[in-house]
Length: 298
Ligand SMILES: NC(=O)c1ccc[n+]([C@@H]2O[C@H](COP(=O)([O-])OP(=O)(O)OC[C@H]3O[C@@H](n4cnc5c(N)ncnc54)[C@H](OP(=O)(O)O)[C@@H]3O)[C@@H](O)[C@H]2O)c1
Image: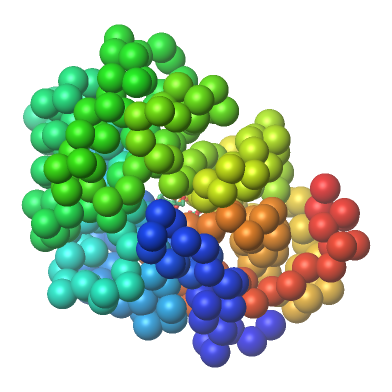
């Protein structure tokens, strides 16, 4: 399929709280993996040129040492790369970040539980991104029980929202009951969970529930699937390969198109540090699958 001329706008838009974004966005976890800083900045700038106005990040996306334990040399923070590439920020750019997990060069991974710890993470994001408020903050949950109830942690973020440091709130790694637990505290504009055509399909019903409640569902690992941080690999899914051939597309593009076909409230945030992959991924915004394709993909 043609690529360069298809922009993120081809996927249509969704309103996150009060901010309109193109449904094809960008995930910034992978840009820290490349020791070539200029290449990371190029990817970010090119994403915005190609219409991306929703970028996902986290202050703990840092390499080497952080989420992607690769490479050597000075720490590369995704948030700081975003600032270096894009500040002063375009008015329509929504940067979504997440708190809960943190990274400290001395202690490694940490978890913010108390209001003071959560505030410190919000302030770290503000500082590294060079902003006076954060557009969207996801509280990233763990599957294990937390020492501090969700309502208390979400309430702490709602206080920061009321104070103007945060515009909108979301939940990540969440389950439907979590939406109910925080319902009376502050609006949830998005759920960010692992989900893809052949991974984590136990979330199918949650995707539909989010749509019914007008909450954006933002899948991560839409390309990597159950390989998670290890990333995408050679495609073995026969149905994906066949649909890709039929559309003269790549299997990765079909994975992203499938994601976008799960509902108007589903937003894509594929991650890459590779400028060519970026262009191909954004072009998937224009890939229309037929009902037969969707049935074949399951
Ligand atoms: N809330 C959470 O807990 C959570 C967890 C993980 C991630 N996230 C967010 O979700 C975003 C997406 O997740 P992700 O980046 O981990 O995984 P992903 O988007 O599913 O896949 C990224 C992997 O696919 C490869 N890739 C990307 N485009 C490709 C293409 N066109 N052809 C071949 N390979 C391609 C990338 O390698 P190359 O760099 O070589 O292209 C990388 O290995 C992250 O960037 C992050 O912002 C959130």
